[in-house]
Length: 79
Image (cartoon, rainbow, N blue to C red; front, side, top):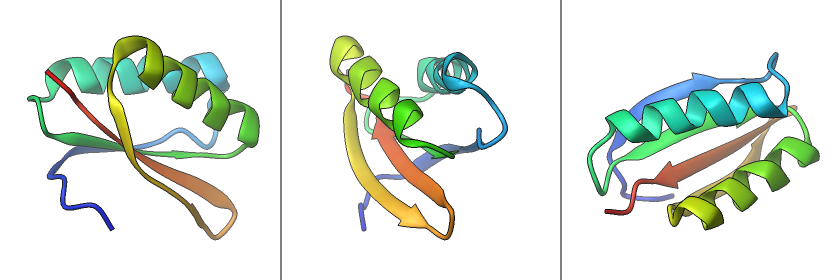
């Protein structure tokens, strides 16, 4: 478990990949450096997109786990 303070939690299990990334990007923009955004997604394709987006924007994924039938990621905002 990460010790990152959560700024926001997003349930994107009903969204497509682009919708999940859009919600995540908006929340990360509003967060302070060092805060995290938790996002719940439904599939591996979206997980890969979140990883690609985080790498491109230089944010850090600090949690990646399965919770029931969902995937939970926490992305830490890096300054």
